[in-house]
Length: 113
Image (tube, rainbow, N blue to C red):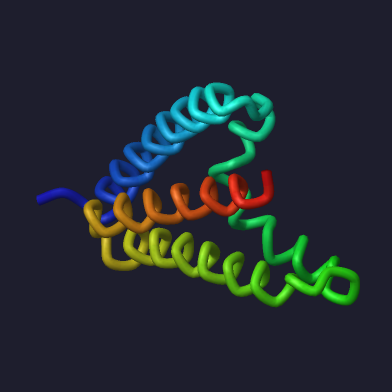
């Protein structure tokens, strides 16, 4: 029987590999559509920064509430992935939630292009 910390470390390692693969795919995709490489690098991480951007633009931009809701959905997907990883030790759930978070973040960044 494996220890809980070994399972958590194994899932964490595979999530890190998934992040690296998503980063490479994102960079390739964003450069193919004519966006910058920087957009491809920051796309999978955009969902975490989006609520803070929306709060900063709350009074100036009329679409800030929609952006804030989309950012909160992305953060909830990331929290679901972390909960599945650290609390439930479910590899499939963690990878699925993290993949949904990454794709949602990339789609939001493409919406701003």
